[in-house]
Image (tube, rainbow, N blue to C red; front, side, top):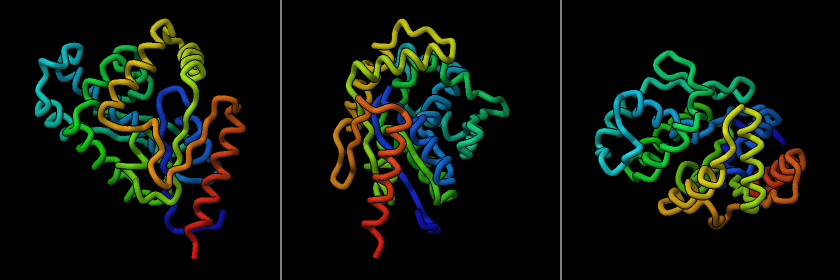
Amino acid sequence: MSAQSRLVIAIDGPSGTGKSTVARWVAQDLKLSYLDTGANYRAATLWCMRNGLDLTQPETVDTQQITELITTMPLAQDLNPNNISVVLDGQDITEAIRSDEVTANVSALSTRPQVRELLVKLQQQAIESRPRIVVEGRDITTVVAPDADARILLTASPEVRMARRRQQLRETDQDPTNVESDVMVRDAKDSALVDFMTPAEGVAEIDSTNLSLEDTVTVVLAEIQRQVNAKQP
């Protein structure tokens, strides 16, 4: 792929499609920065919990309380795909944000439009600071980076997504027992606000159900090349 000053790649998809791993591999292959927007939501969730908000009872938490906390959140996220780290208030929380407790409560934030709007602005600022970047999450192709140079929706069957999520949890010594709740319920909650299951106009859908990780990356790289070439004069 020819060098250019700007190259923004947006990758959407539900849980368990492998989009985080695929996006990171693509970033490494193309020597781009990498932004995991899901880590933003998880870090914000952890920050709210550490500041005394009971997100297990989201109806009792005022949205303004959450947004005020997020605006003061001292978050530093490394955008180097070879050195994934998230630091909150000087503490490395890269592993902590993947805990079962954070996973169970992240929807208390991600389903609130005001919270999403605030975090989207932070994500767009990150893109502006690193114009050669792969951005992945749930509403990237339509909200965060709708004018990206390449936009892809990565999907897979529910059965495959749950199996991949179980394997991911086992590899990180987490309990895979509640994987169906983790994947399907959280997707259902978030899809009430953001459509990350249907490709918008101009977004290429890639179904990874029958593809290995390596094959998925190959297909995604080819689609990126196709879209970038199509936009060149």
